[in-house]
Image (cartoon, rainbow, N blue to C red; front, side, top):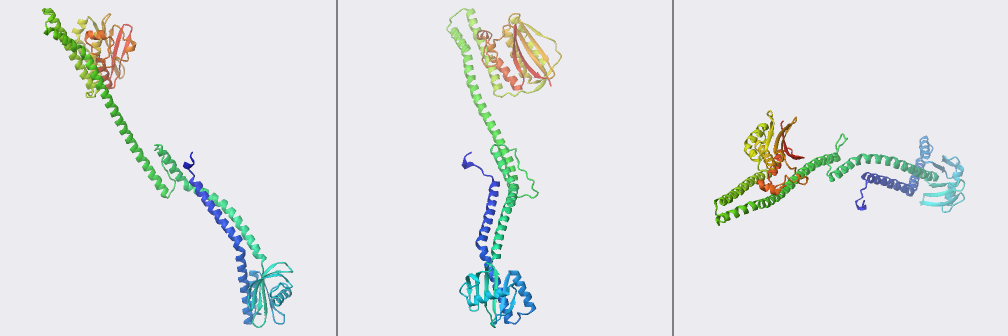
Length: 500
């Protein structure tokens, strides 16, 4: 698939975006922790130390430093913020302290007072954060313990010396713990959040995927796929799915109508082309078939006019030829008109129920004179009435063509046999004549207009080659079977009619 047309899963995109946002968020939090947490803790520690120093200073100034209430408050502050403190009077006596080694704390206080701008005897190094006339805030490292402290010391009203300090190790420990905890939380949150996001994105994107698959099927003109939703409460995707279902049904109906219209148009075009071809063929065949009789009529008529033969017998012969050819032309034109009406659908079969035995019997009676002239013998058994469905006039036309064809081609024993073979729902009318079988190469062509197996013989009895074409048009118009069967001693033509 071309990379430009490659489709990415929306579920993947949503999940990847969410996980990237979580990664970015936790990453920023960890960076912020590493960058600003220690400074924030130091600022907070400084505020606590200043608050404790201010409380002690206020208690000294108002004379409440030795009260139980102040002791309780001081104990709460020092325990909460991990603060050590000491208050010395002007004579270096300890007024108040919560340190386990107040003497050492007192020495550090005096060391700060005596060496305010240097590291001093008990301090590795100092970092002055804020220096005022009455107090100093600094960071230093205790030589005895090696710990880093934040201290605030100064001389309050009345000459008392005050030192408040808190170790900085707790800040670093807290920062490390916070960052470690943040890392664990980030990993757990990423795992749990990713799993939840994959599940949620699946719930959200499954309906969208359904819609995509439905649209893909619609693109292939398959409208069977429909959108279904299991949601109790419908949302915009469900509404879109319902709209796509309606769109699918509408498209299917419109395409069906379009195909039907296209099929009908194509059939009309084909029919028109077929009719045009039939007209051309009809005119060509008619002109060819009429050429010979017209030439004969014209020739004998001119002979009469010019008195080529002045005896009466010759004139009568000329007149008989003219009359005979005119009769043949008349019969052929009538048959062509009948065939034309049948092929162009102008005559619609009038289906009715009639007695086929009576129809055949009546026709055979009317044809007795023609049978005698041919010296033929017609066999037709006595049948009980058989009622069939069809157009009686057209069925008689079919039988007449079969019988005339048999009469014209009968030879040998000169027997014509008419049979009615009845089944449960149909009857087959068969017309057999003794004579020469139809050549195999001509079997498939005898139903074509103007096709003649033996042109010389056909010309002899005045055949036009249209009769079997009329049979074909009539039987196909009624939707019934017809055909021909060769035998060693003759030919049998048949057609079928329904009895129910």
